[in-house]
Image 1 (tube, rainbow, N blue to C red):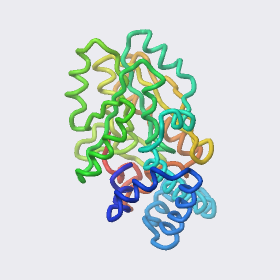
Image 2: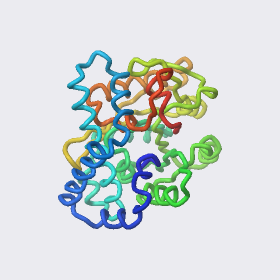
Image 3: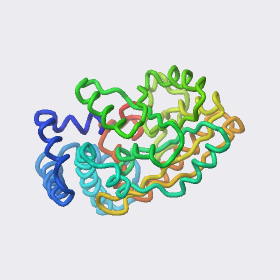
Length: 304
């Protein structure tokens, strides 16, 4: 979970997490419904932020339709909260039944070409269960993540995300660690969630995203070109409560055939299409703080 989410539960975090991890899913979703009611109707937690972001992204959408998406976005949020905590005590077999990977031959083909791969995703549906991917590929799994300022939650998040064997790499160490790993005799999978924005002062590329002109992370493209890595998009979709399906599509197997920022642009357009299909599952609608001067992405906390 991102720190903005965990912050809601800090005062009772540890006992709450411990309790949720030991409950069955039926009970968990009853609690999720109650949390949704509290967050949305009682505390109005960031409701104005989600509302403003939806208005920015979908200005022509009827207000009634945006309101329904807004409510469903909060329902999805509380489900992700509790599903994440539940995963601490989930057996691998159960998680593998709830998070299914389709067309894994896409990764297998790249592996058989003896090529490293960057797998890009977004903060959409449940990205927290994706770490079980280690069980369906021969690649060594590495995930880029933003270090949390709260040391307890940073340690907890890193431990949980690496419980199935993933190597967690802090964003600030990305280039150094990948340089080291590139010298080893093994093929690596690098997971990036690049649908957030760098600081404006450090932005190398700006593009249109959901009707807003925003700075966009280009690190994944830079690394892909430097080390000749294939780039793949992983699309996660919610089948029903507690069940997800991920599929893979190749962005490029030959990154140096593209002009600068073309791969970044391809990625961000795929994410935009994903969000337009079912915007209620895009968790980053919650992360921003409204400002009439900035677009949606440019108001998200910086990540990988």
